Length: 344
Image (tube, rainbow, N blue to C red):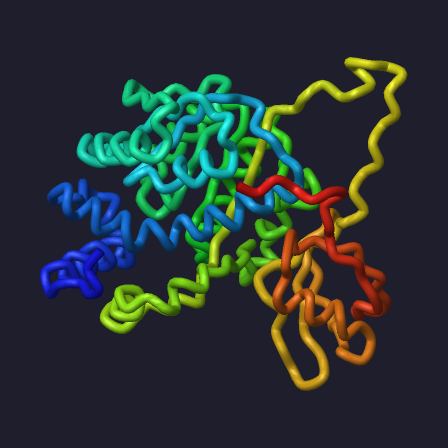
């Protein structure tokens, strides 16, 4: 691999990024050649892949498994979402790749075949029925009528894994999509600690949005091309905000299948950290989501120093059981899986 981008490659990256930032990317097909797709796949798509890695790792920590062996990657682009999903859930048998760009579909299919030769790539008309549907960074390119058509398509899915950029606008659109899909019988898996309406949509919370932060791989900070990418395009490699929601169709309870089975205890980890704590001298302000709504807490270092450190740099799922009083967090326990998950 070349150690540096050429001037022509940097101009292509700038053109692509300008379209994403000014909102014009959704107006037409922005791929001009297969080399555009390859360049995007090696740069912008990798950053999206790091966000998918964070989401998929959380699903594995939660010990979630897809109900279907068949995937629809809707708006697939170069196919980074489906490749990340297959790495985390290798029992997947087929991936249907859908994109408005025929060149993108072909590129994604070829990359999928290179990486996972035993998985069938399907380029036919998209059908979400009984599939796990992957959606990645599509909301900023969809007009209202196209979003309505997408929501209608998702009604027949077995599960939806939807990752967006983490901006205020796209996150709130995702919260609205979540509300619509919950109304059609889906149940939330992550990140929501409840199945109630999203408190972000309450007018009093208009300034907030549900977002989290992924960690780039350490190698990205030791690579000359990533350094050039950062410098020439003015992108902070350390900042990877994302929003996501995972929904699934309800499965029969253990009691329905085996009436004698004991009902599993509900998880006590009911406070979901939103964004990052805001650091002040001697304390942090922490925003959490729970069934009662959004709450901003004060967490003093003298009260819970280990918890404060954990919340600043969560090592797993940023969900907690907190002991609170008068707007302060007095103590807390971070989510930990019941056993070490498989992570390929």
